[in-house]
Length: 294
Image (cartoon, rainbow, N blue to C red):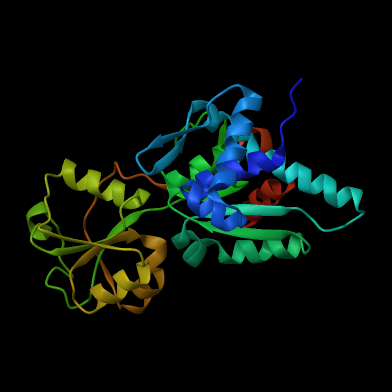
């Protein structure tokens, strides 16, 4: 039986994470030729091709994706074994993917409570968009993720719905539409529309809603910062669609108002995503207990 050299597996994982051989070589402080040779050795050991080049882009093949699904677990288990052999009490790292708006507006108290329950637990937070984080959980690159997306079934994963996350149309209190009892497609078509960046699950839901209602906004701006969006529309610079949780404080203080835009087909939830074989991880149980108590 052919054994797998974990050093080579780690190199493969780093190439995919960094997007190429050159940046991975920089991280490893090795030459590109040495990194490439490691991958050739791993491919020869396994008898499969793991990476494919598309121009300057290096992507995993189907076999590469299958191996990467085990990579994180293999490397974590090796680290735990090393610590156990050394008699170390240091806990393993828990890698948590999280949508930044959830961290900022929803989950910070829960994460603080987890630290109280597991005071020695080492936590690493990986920010990202929901689709990317779901893929990372499936590939074993992170242990679990908090996402905002529609409820769905994903092969090999368990998705725990936490809270419904309504998307609202926001404006500053001085906007011409503030106080309107209706808000039609024609009302917003000519308004500057501020959205989160491409790839965001709730931006995708909003764009689908606009298409259903045959709205083609003339001016769309994408922002990576929810705070920047809120500050802009407070000053009268257009309208914005955001999860209500991200604007609760501004709505309560009157710095923002909601407009009567409704689409029942926008149904998003914050969700805890974990691999099915990790569904009984103690940290998952702790999180679910905390949410039940909230």
